[in-house]
Every structure is written in C-alpha cells, then in structure tokens.
Image (cartoon, rainbow, N blue to C red; front, side, top):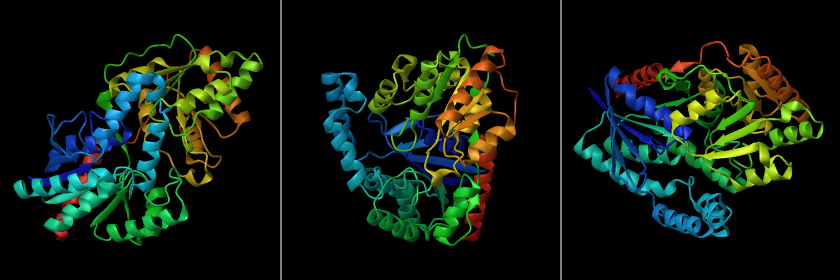
Length: 416
C-alpha cells in the first residue's frame, strides 16, 4: 500500500466546512490503496489525534496559545461581548493576523508544520503529498515537504487563493500573493479544484490544466434522521458568517419590511449555528428583528444536521459581489441531502439561482423585492404542509471523492 501525507489545516473534530473534504479522503483513500497520515493543527493542545481510519499528527500554530489565553481572559472578564469579538484587543489581534501574516492568517502554522512533515517523512517514507486549501499555508507546507524528499505533490483548491472575492486586500498585497502563488504552484505535479469555474480561473493564473473533483457528502451522516414536520415556520443557517461577503443583512431587511406590513411570513424564527458575530447581532437590532433571531453557537456536525431537519427552510448566504457569481459552494450538497427547501441570497447572476430553479430546491434573492417574495413563497409552502423535498442527486459521495483522488495520486507517482 502506498503512503500519503495529507496536509490539511482543518480536520475533525474541527467543525469548519473545510474539514469535510480532507476527512473524506482520510477515511476512504485506504480502500483505493493509500495509507494516510494527516498533518493538521492541534485542538486544545493535543499532539496527535486518535481516529480509527488514519494516523493524525499535529503541529502547533505560533501565537495561538497566547491568543487563546487572551480570548479566554476576555470572555471570563466581559462575558459574551468578548466572545463575539467586540473587544478592541481581540479586534487588534485579528487585524495583526490578517494584515501582517503572509500568505494568510494561518502562516504561524507553517514553521512547525514543515518541521513535523520532515520528521514524519524520515520515519515513514511517503509516496506522495496532497494539500487542500484554503488556507494557502497548507500548500506552502506541502511544497516544502515534497521538494525536500523528492515526492509528487497534488495541490487541491477548495477556494481560490489569489483573486478570492472573499478577501479584501490592497493591490500591493494582491500582487505579491499572485506572484508567490504562481512560483509555488510550479512545483505541483497536479492541481485540482471543486468546480469548473474555479478551474478556469486557476488555469489562467498557472497556464496549465486543472482537474475538477467536486465536493462530496457522506450519506451516512443523514442515516436514521426522522422525517418530521417542523412545528413552526423556522429558518436555519449552519456555518460561519463574514461581514463583508457572507451576511444575513438582506434577510433581516426583508423580514423587517414584511413585519411592518403585517405579513404572516415575518412570523418566523431564524436559528444560526456557528461562531457568533457581534455585527450580526447589531444588524438584527438595526432592522428591529433581533427577537426573531436565535444564536445556538458551534455544535457537532450531527447536531447541526438534526437542526436542519427541524427547520422548515434552510439559508444560504453568498457574497453579493458580482465577481463571486460562479460560486456554488459545498453547503448546497449538504442541504440537498437534508431535503428541506432552500432560501439563498447572492448576486443577480449567481449560478446558485439557476441550480435551485433547475432542481426545484427553493428560492433565490438578490434584492429586497426578491427576498420578500421568497419568504412569502417559503411561508406559503410551509402552511400547505409541503416541507419535504424529494430525494435527488446530491453530487459526489465521499467514496467517489477518494476514488478520484486515488487515481490522480497513482498517475502522479507513476509519472515520476
């Protein structure tokens, strides 16, 4: 059996969406002839993770312990305000990490991760390295290890690096990122990504072919969930939020307008599962709908899926910037398996609009009028008792994902 070093900044039990793809690879690649060692960051000071299907080793992040100590002290002193990021000190820490760290905020992981990668390669010689990003620091770690030991390297993009519409960076930093990305990725034997749109973007940057391996889901995550009728018109979002490119403002504005008109579609509950954000709270207050919003915090994936099933409709928030219109994202796969109608908010020309319409999955809105119409339609459907979507093709399954990567890895090894 061949041996793979899988470099992934996010990995379970981390609940970030970015942990899913590497987790599926670690779980199922052994079925296709690849023994996996995962190199990731520690959670709660661990050095290794005990899981049944792969060896998981960790490398610390420079400054992470200090930041965690500051965060815990602020939470103890100031309560939820600090935990939501309202503290000026926490804001300063975030600014420092985002502005000075290069190539991204995870750069403090690179020195120790490279060192750990080297030590693992000496003890357990690998046949290939695979990194999945973002953060792009994972590619830096993989490139260094592959170069040091003469190994083939597959660089997988879950999101763009340079030109990512979710990152607001100045022209100088953007130029430096692009030059660094091009130089680094010349060393990659193969580049993969999740969609044809991102592949075209990467091909323009790197002037080479990029292979599309779509995101996947694990059907077993939904096994045993009851088919229940939600008790009330209730909306649910599971995931993280970003003030500049993933915001519920349009939803709040629509609910506020419907409430002012006395429309029953405003009689709902909006549940958010994921990291809390003070700006989301302020947005809800600004539109006088804070009483409709419930923040449930970060929960295990199984609880998030159960919460989706308890809702009448599920929410997706996309970047409203037109440059992000090509983004479909991985959440649509998860929501489709949950079989609840979807309310999505994004730019007018988003590929999500056509996807929802073609598969009869829900509604899409890019302005206030559309958002109000979508909420009314969702409410009417709930009142009619039609809340369960028919089973439909949800895309790649986790084994399909592993099979596709195993094929690329075998090709890369055989070319050497």
